[in-house]
Image 1: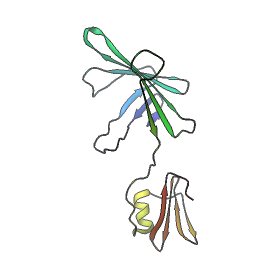
Image 2: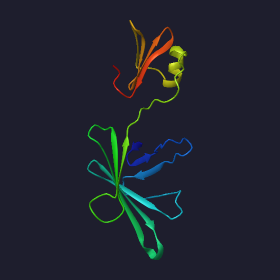
Image 3: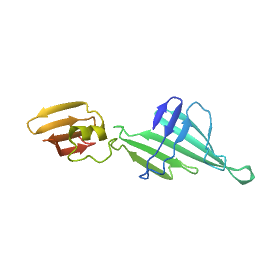
Image 4: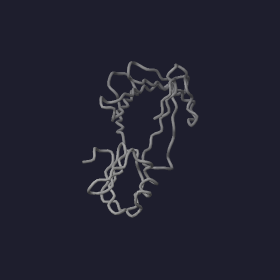
Amino acid sequence: MEHTEPVIVITPQVGRADFVRSVEYRTDGESVRDRKAVSGKVTSAHWEGRNLVMETKTPGYGGVHALKREVMYLSGDGKKLYRDVYDGPGDRPGQRLVFEKICKYSGYLPRDGGEAGVRKVLGDPLRVEKQENGTHMVYDEAEVVLVDGRISYSCFCVPCK
């Protein structure tokens, strides 16, 4: 998700690298037409406190519009994004989607690639520490320990112990 007020661009990744579609919303009241939809679907978005509210109108037959309301908000710790979808009248969402923050690091770490191999996949670390049990390459969400130029331990997205 990229957010520079009043534009929010959401690019969900669902496991398939060949299926990535970005959706743009505006929070200044300007409606955005879905360029991929044939139906002329239009979405407007606005803030209600800390919640992002999106309302989508899809034209139907006889001038009747289908209306979908979605409310997005973060969990208290900021690690989950909730998306409640209201397809009809009522106070309860018909669907709740929960997106969990995933580690930004991905890729194969070559076991014998040494420090250069780790840097090639993960980039430059925040710091490199020489310790008794090896060289620790510390990233904001990862840590890799090298012994004699080989990876002996790595952890991602959790506090490394």
